[in-house]
Length: 317
Image (cartoon, rainbow, N blue to C red; front, side, top):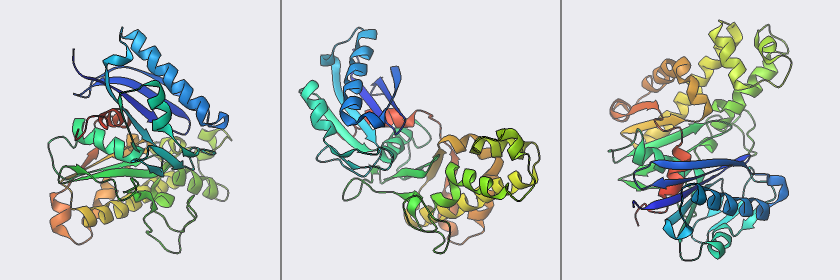
């Protein structure tokens, strides 16, 4: 039997749990609601139950697992196995996640890491980053995050919270970010920023975005659909997405000089609509040795968060 690992991709609304091989093949997975409002103990108990359910479905026992890897919103303390605090997991503070799972899965190696770092590892090992030494993964969704692999090593930082790329300041006097700072990268280039900008502007400007959203909360997908139909405002917002994403990516390229960058997350599903503007923005800037060598594509693995979490249990073991 191949070595098997359990992967736990912990999110603010759902938890994706799977059993995978060292080659990145997911044998089975189950998604469950996080139910943050019920507290961490409830979620942790549900994680345990789901792991057992998966093992039963695959005719396995916990003794067949070589390790468990967990990707979680940060800040975390990976050495102590603690979720320190997270705006995506409200009420979770100093949660000893690894300790609580170790009580149930005694003797099994359990690793906790920031979810952006975990997703970067998954895409590096099994996706677009496979085979290169210097790789960046950027996720563009509710926020902007990701991770960096430099000289074939995952960069986790002093407290396991490296590569908070979404909170690079790209405009000191700019839009307010959810973190409290002004002008963060994700305040301009995330799915949430697309929604906010569109919601603000349709109050005074004509657009079919209102029609497509049917009077409900505007979502990024409504903006992209409107742009596909030729709506002037939506096209402008989508072009600005490419522009600001290009600025942020250029900054990242200047810092890390990667061979490859992959872009994942929900907004990446429409990457073709703003890819040219993003690349034009990057290529208009200096540091040509860095920009010319780097290839940028959509992420190959939509499940990189899950497989990256599982890979934590054997990466550099």
